Length: 414
Image 1 (tube, rainbow, N blue to C red):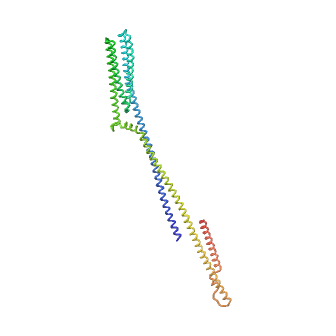
Image 2: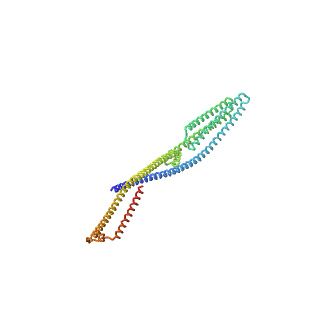
Image 3: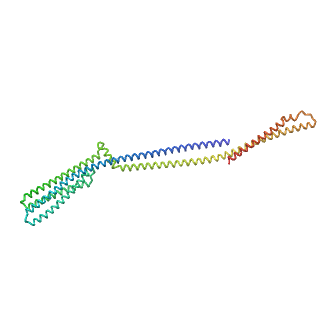
């Protein structure tokens, strides 16, 4: 009964250990499945990252194509502006040449009309040099005005946004043109005063000066018209730029999207990279946690196996002790049985010997007797010898079997 209880307890412990092992194996499988899912997510994120990079590269290529188109448009605008500037420069050079020729003619006329007056001639030469300096200043201002207008026209042609400095440049151009007009008016008044003071009778010189003044006023009016035209074109280009920027689906959506992406592509790439980096870190942390949990479960499995081995060793030792006691008791019992049989055999032999002895005594005493020795023994001498030999062989084989079993048990126990 004790052996059955110990065996039942051992079976229950084995069943519980197997259940725990199955549970731990299922948990390990779940963790491995989670690890596989997380790896698949990492691979998917890497694929999405590659796709996003391809999309970004496509957008960059589109932006490059747009930039090439804008550069071509800019080059055409620059060519047109250069042609216009060449024309305006040519007109300016013609006007300056006409002015110089007019100055030379006025000098010759003044020298021919004021022949013999030395002081007046000296003063005329000083006035001519001063007027030439003023004309040079006017030319420089006009050149500055033209360069500024060219810069603004290029910016408008390239569809660039105007800044506060550009508005200030426009105001400065307007003031420079007004100053040029004022200086030209002063010069025309000086010419008229000199002509009236030096040669009041020179009608041809007056007509020439009036003609030059009219040409100058016409040139200034043309400059003002060109300035107004340039301002109108700049305003139109600004309106067109605003329309391109704020139009809806009716406008050029691809161009507008490329502009928007061109402005925000760096920010989008940086934000997406940051998001991917955060997701990668979170997945790595979860992977590390899963690996740590897996290592912990493996350690628990090892500990439980070790404890189970220790428990099984103690249980096996107890079972071995009980089994040894059982074997000893069994051997003692069987030895007692054999001893009992041997004693019974001896007693039987003694009884037969006693009967035989009594029979012999009766014979020797001369008393009649109906018993004989052969009848008392009931067995022949050969049968008794064979039976004794067989019993001895059985006892020897039994002893050998018990010795072998005891040695096997003791060796297994050691």
